[in-house]
Image (tube, rainbow, N blue to C red; front, side):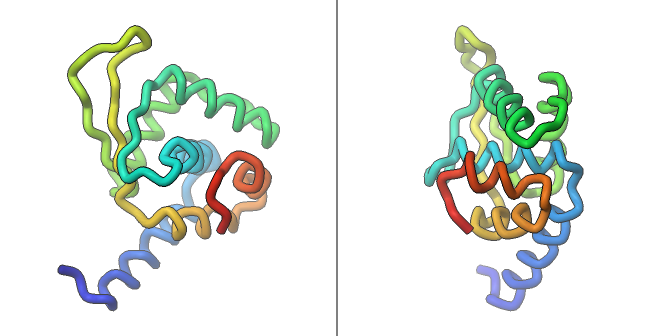
Length: 131
């Protein structure tokens, strides 16, 4: 069990890490929170997720990455310990099903993301959680 001081320090480290992410990684993270929608685990099909990500990029007026680029950003967030990706081995029509668990506090993520002017519009229009 972590002590409160350790949790505060961990939240500060994650806040700094999220604040310094490139814009596309921030969009990927924001869309994960949107898909999460209150559940601890979310089931994610990469093609469905990609189209939502692409719409989010259009909303804030930047060019979207390729599907591979988005998948690399998801893996980057997994490596940073913000997300945890669990592969489910069964195949669906639209590809392999992935399960993503949020390892960081969603409210803290939203707070860190809202400090970026480029993504504030996305946060206010696309996410069900208000910070």
